[in-house]
Length: 334
Image (cartoon, rainbow, N blue to C red; front, side, top):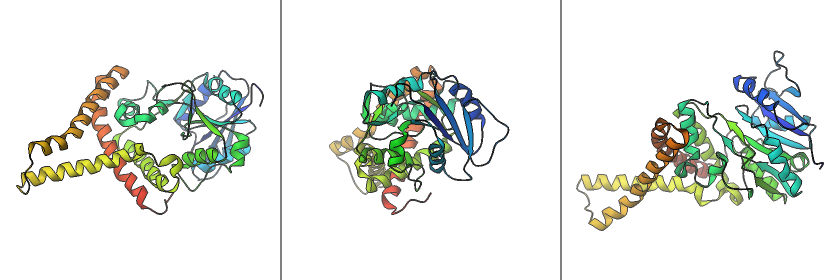
């Protein structure tokens, strides 16, 4: 690979939308000479043209099929996958490409997808859930610039760069899944003997969901596929971290049923039992308060921290339920 390889930026979308109209001009400001933009939509678009940009037509197929088509048409040595509602910092490619140049075994590089400062309040709340200690946990570096360069096992295609020759070698995306096709791609890269790396400075900005329903729908879909993958692809998905929301749901069910039984006079607690059952929820509540304060400070807006508190709880509850569904099903429907 040359010191300045050509990069093909691939963006799947149903149609040219307001987010793409925002992102393409920002992509054209990249501090990198040799790159192209490939936008893949359902139908042909003749109204929009940009330098270095190719508009491809895929028909009404999913994002994985669109990305595969973009990769097939790409002329770059590196495939840079972006979501249609994301845009990069100007040094995005400069920061990420050096990871490939330093080690030929590195086949993929991912960076954080940060909530833009001009997003609405509820979008910031949705992003704050993923950024929080309780909500994001060890995956917080997907949403914030945290830590240093390190190896990783799984990264979303909102900000993922892959060597084209390796992408072709493993057969591209597994189009049987959406979401989750990026997790399967990363697993295939690892199984082929290559490495993946996280670069905290390879930043893109990712617009979040605009209301509670859309947020829970998104996280629920993530949980469904992660639960299924924990069973089918345990190498990267059978992690205790992913089971924690389900364990939390079970704990709350025991706590509530016990309180109900006491209220009905069916059982009596001694002081030790009462305290032991309340300790986890007390620790969780303190964690919510701490996260709310940190979020309020980070966003310079107490309302974001206040609204994030119930959102984190609801996200955990719903994730735990959908994760179990993923474990239970034998096959996921697209």
